[in-house]
Image (cartoon, rainbow, N blue to C red; front, side, top):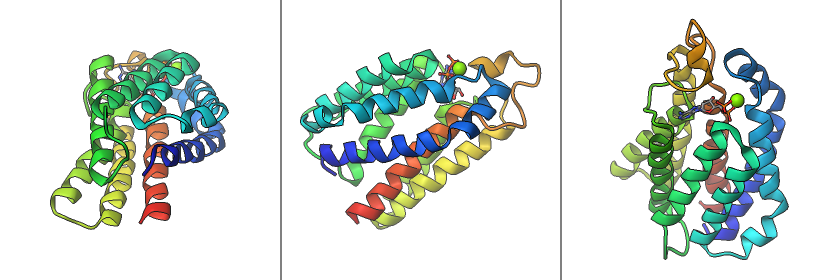
Length: 211
Ligand code: ADP
Ligand code: MG
């Protein structure tokens, strides 16, 4: 996957996030302050508007630019978390020219580590981390058992969906849902839903265009 193709994936993801506005906002109105989708969508629309500039960059500077843009355009907890995630991914891929099945993992693991560190949060705490973490665990298991690339990308998607679904029964430890008396139990975490959308799009993009 070239840097320009990564930008194509970002554009498809932005469209998918755009379509899920009512659903995500209704969820966030139950456990958060209702602004998660508006903010995230603003961030991804901003990326669409600078797609030509992004496409002119090499991989690491492109990821850094995505991070800086998301950090300033999203705001709220998720702006800082996505920003830190992409900036860490940029550092981890310094000097790498294109993404393959393994370096895609390097990107995502770096993003996960940075989000966990920045948010001081762990898997199982009912956040965006849960989709990414379970997706990556499942990706890694498929990679290590030498499954073909399609199966590895399917594993990423399926794991992310399970992580998202597991947030329904989790008690929130961080973030606004943790201020609720029931800790958000019974509802999906909106940040886990939007993280899952991104990983589904990534998996679909690779399977449909690169394999
Ligand atoms: P807020 O309203 O808390 O500023 P957003 O509305 O931008 O944040 O995003 C809310 C989402 O951010 C939550 O659904 C959750 O997935 C994620 N989140 C909140 N706090 C954290 C944290 N400390 N670590 C990881 N993810 C978090
Ligand atoms: Mg919010």
